[in-house]
Length: 39
Image (cartoon, rainbow, N blue to C red; front, side, top):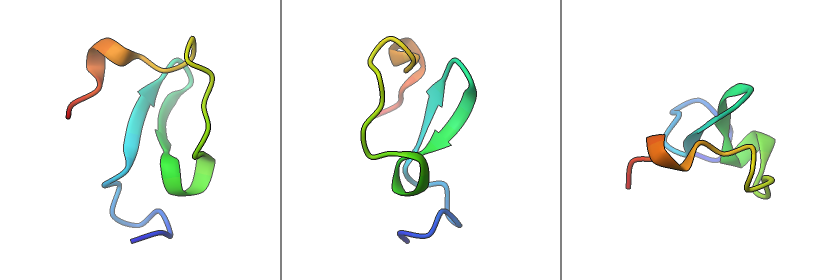
């Protein structure tokens, strides 16, 4: 959606769930919980 309403772009981080369209698109790799990312 591009505005954060649908959570379709959400990723788990050490600080909780972040939305790529609002909080990203760039994140520190050590902050993202890769084992919890669903593709």
